[in-house]
Amino acid sequence: MAKEEKKDKIETVATNRKARHDYFITDTYEAGLALDGPEVKSLRLKQATLTSAFVRAEKDGLYLYGLHITPYAYNTLTEADPLRTRKLLMRRQEIRKLSGALTIKGMSLVALEIYFKNGWAKVLLGL
Image (cartoon, rainbow, N blue to C red; front, side):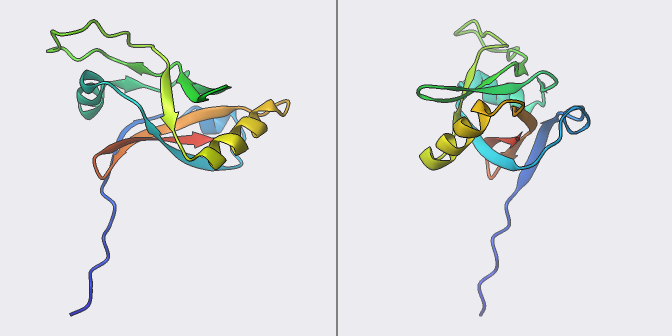
């Protein structure tokens, strides 16, 4: 018997429809998101807004600003900040490449879409 190809299961959470209209997207990149447990539950309920989300390069990696994740209603352990900065998880060479591209005048990195790919929270970035 032949092996079946494994297809990625993708579930879209939020889309930034204005980004493709406001920006000229040359390349797209996929990055993982470092999230807390209640944030993942809120994302699974599709309670996120991407309209003003952008990426900045800092000395220890790339960070996503402006992503609003509504606090999970049944979380009793911690008080969540819905607009906190979230670290992007990418390979080191991709981080260096994007950090260099962000230093060029007129270039910016915006979040286009948030989705779950095989159970992992991912963000699609546009340069």
